[in-house]
Image (cartoon, rainbow, N blue to C red; front, top):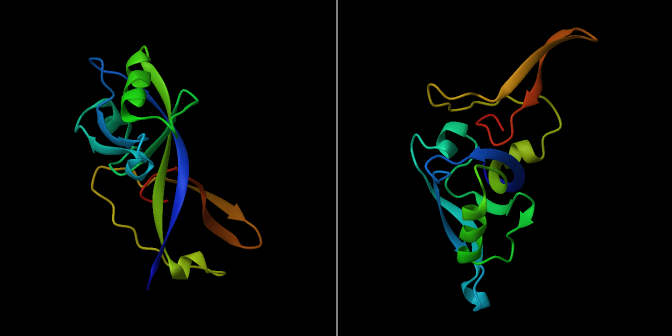
Length: 148
């Protein structure tokens, strides 16, 4: 089946370690509008603060830091904002969720199979309900998790 991609936005709190959040950025606004690109995470350093937090992946777009909108920021301006942060930062990111068309247009129950790397969290919380009959339902889905 075909896939529809939906952008979603999440916020993540990160702490610096040795002056770094542990990710690389590319893109940004340019005086030449044709060269302007979204600020995009290109690499997450294994074992670094961003990697350990687990939400942000390469390809995610950085929209804001500490509610400072970076939508029109150049890469240099964005890096200045990151350097100015003392130790912690609240990051607003946009990421893509790929959804099969069948799911986009579904109205009834679905069987969903998820490939999960051993040791990673699935990202769901289950709860039991008793109406009209007993069932186990997904109570929450963590943003940017494998389950989402």
